[in-house]
View (cartoon, each protein chain N blue to C red):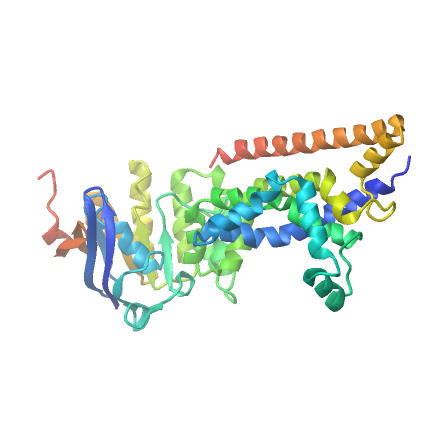
Length: 227
Length: 224
């Protein structure tokens, strides 16, 4: 279970505002953060990852405290069990596809797990290629596999599919869903795509100006814009 | 033609480059990623040798390195090392003199590595050191090459600092630029010309190779 109780001052296009969260996320949930640009969605993910320090509050995952303002505790990113996929792929250009995954492998883990992950995202045939010789969709599949090599408790996806075309998006949505279920992950996904949220998430939170406007099951919270 | 001044120069430039790389990487990393107080002042200090007349820098180093003064006495007492009119002194002086040529390219190299690559490495559970060695440095190889070659080449061309701190001791501190000056003084223009020509060709080739490498590197990076 993830407890996310944090505040942080942010500056947006309409001036400063405060991100104020009080959420509990159950293990195995696929939570979508939905809302306009600049509402603070990425800041939420960055706070969980440890890249952005909340002004106050507490973040804990499965009983382990990652941040506690009162106790002045702020666990460094590398000690937080997360997998993160960025919009801009962020694969290491100096390593091959396999190198990128092996880099993420914790000490003592068997390399056969890398092969398994490559198989899961259907990229074994490309393992010796450099990232620059891959398409956008292939890069993002590798980024997803790399994020999961260390078997994190929490998968953070920051608009991972927004740069991809429709067909590739559909394929990757399947990959995300499959991996989420197979590895028993808790996943937080930022998306602007209504259908993507509907397809992937079982809970959605609408954020505006740093505040949770609505929170609930996808069907209850979101209404199809074309109906 | 006596090649000793060349060997002394190359040895000096090689050791200086290596030492400056070891000092320059953490310094440039700090300047690039930790914009805290004192940063501007430190940047100005690092850049000083770019505009300071080498004789001024050499003069102060000569004073500080003198066994009469604290720093010189400290090195002599604890390391049995005399820094005036010795090769070791030249190395230390060159480290100060060539510092901006190592630190500035490395600093812009550090800034050129996309932040998300660094964040991706941290999110994969890697330490700052691991990220530096495996992700950041390999992705700024152009900047490392520029920094190394510029430092090496700049040290080769030293004159004022070397003359002040090292004197002009043949076989010990007489580097190539001072040899040229000596030969001109003695009106041996032929030898001065040969020495100079070698330095001229070396300088051109150095810069040509850096630009060529960086041009090719930029082309390959544009695929990303």
